[in-house]
Image 1 (tube, rainbow, N blue to C red):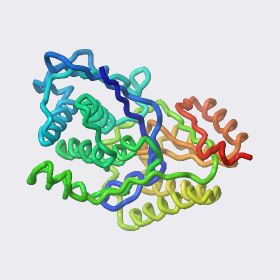
Image 2 (spheres, rainbow, N blue to C red):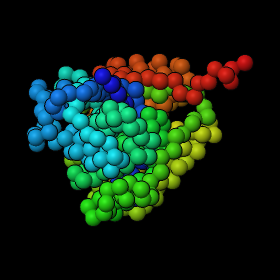
Image 3 (cartoon, one colour):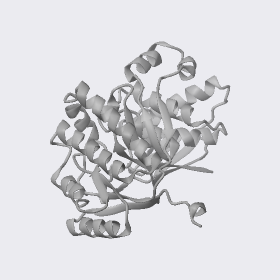
Length: 337
């Protein structure tokens, strides 16, 4: 038996704008995992703990995403000269509590998980870029409206700066051209790991409100104009530079700016709970904002001293916001002398 896992993800900046080609977003991997177990079997068996039953490869409406991923990976493996065989695949880790999702995972998490499991099963590991392309191809063929930024982060398991590609153009290639040829082409995206040059606490607060990202995206996408896109791209680029050069005030300033851009884009992004989450960082050496599509789920905070972290956590607790994850970033023992 082989076991693989995929992490969760949360946006720091660049939400919504990233839906347009050539835009930038900063996205952080969150080590809360989904796992897949895959092993040889006489017959195909697919099981996810999202559902109370398992299936084979015969079409099933609940398992469509997983079945389409299996089909695409098998198509890829066949072009690699791999001989296919049946397997049993079990997926666990719903990234939710009491039926309420955290907003850390996505359809992208499931797709990457299935691809990683199958490639491991066939001892045919893929580099980050190929994993990204295979997972994106599954979603593009399904008509998914996402930016694929979640996939960029999940295949990297890091803090990444992602530049989006023209998804309509690539979807058209996938429809009309040989799959292997499309995989070999330059799609026009980039994924770069970002190494912060300063120390801080990164916190994730869960509002316990469930947001439906796809509905939010459809609704709000139409509000974007050229000035929003330009401002968002500049803000993300400046934020990354501030992180890399260790400029604390600039990091706070750029995350505040990213937050303001979202607030101006649509009043639906900041629910009352997310607004409270954001406001807890006022008067602290910290900054907080919504993450991703908004409308519920999680918000994030960066805190630059211990007192601010302690106070922020207390304020979140008082508001009923659950601390889902906390990490010390930029800490390097080697630099301490």
